[in-house]
Picture 1 (tube, helix red, strand yellow):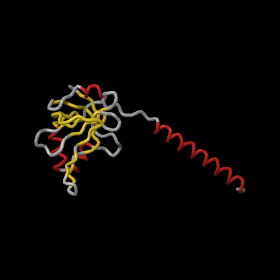
Picture 2 (cartoon, helix red, strand yellow):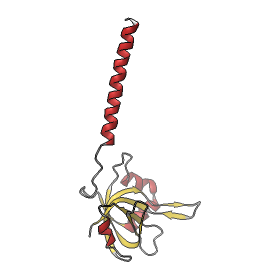
Picture 3 (cartoon, helix red, strand yellow):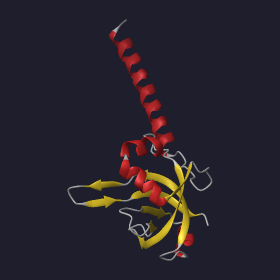
Length: 157
């Protein structure tokens, strides 16, 4: 092969590679988000039981509820509303925590589901559906317990 043919073939292969990589990137960027509210519930738990499961063995909890692919389990968690706040994105964050528990379940709502959470009051028992993002834990350096984190939440009852 001559030098011109080698360069021509290399440029064609490079163009095909760039086009393929660009197509994959475009597909991944425009891929629809998971619709948590219309998806089936994988686990139904009490908030205290979920927290205790993580505090007892975080690795087992992670294996059971979290996925490296990002498709973590969808949960329905029942608990008593401890506090209600807003995050920097103006989304409601409801903490489900029983009296005497070391940690709770932090439930972050979306702009679409905020209205259902605005009706909640402290002390009320509620069931919240959402996708789990992080388990409970204990930080010995700060002497603090970390809450279980649920995202894309909505009130079920």
